[in-house]
Image (cartoon, rainbow, N blue to C red; front, side):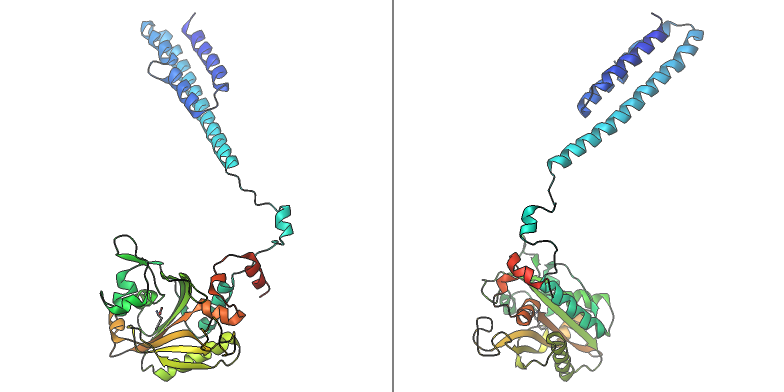
Length: 349
Ligand code: PHE
């Protein structure tokens, strides 16, 4: 048999063989048995050395053509196999999102926003209308942002006020308050400025009707020249009035937070029991809602602001408590409970 017919025969055999290949492993084997060092093509080509130059001129290009054909077929088959393999994987992991009888029966025909999200968005709008920016910050913080820059040095007893989830190595932690965003916010801008930072915070708390390990705060910070405590009080009252759509009774008590001086606890008359005493207000008729105060000079310094030139106030609104007051929810644990009977009620808002 002459060498040209041999090449034709090789190609025909290859075409037959590749039809039966269905896995990448088989394809690799086929490839090496035809195109590998000791593969069939080289086997045929090794005979070229005994040919005359004229013969070589004919056989050379023919062999090249066969080689290109084989390579093309292999590439095409390889992508076909790859696609089939991906499809098999996808089919195996398929989740049925369809509109099943159970979904219909449970009336889960449309979603709704979580009450915390609804209230957060509303409050963001109120603050945006007052010229505040809305900032975001990381849930995992370092000691500097969560404590040190906020005037809570290592070994300061104030650290014990917040039961902290430390990460391995005790260098990082799940932020215990949104106050950590104060530090990021100050560093990224120059005074005067005003921003809020809503988000999740984490504390290793024992849970009860008014305490959860994961809850939401909304931090606020305003830095300007000659800001006074009366500015702070007026401001807070205006915000609460906007939120509750009516005047709410508030009281101010001294409160200790190392990052403000003076610091206050702003309480509102419990809207669940109208001050008569219930499990949310722990029978005192008032709910701690808005700790606040004038920013401590050390905090301004840590944020790169000259405390002789600028001052301001900061506050930390308890978002979940606010939601509870707004909708008369008597247990904070409902908020993260994911019970659809609870969540469904907020669709209409
Ligand atoms: N970060 C404080 C807390 O979580 C709240 C707070 C914020 C107090 C801002 C004063 C000013 O308890």
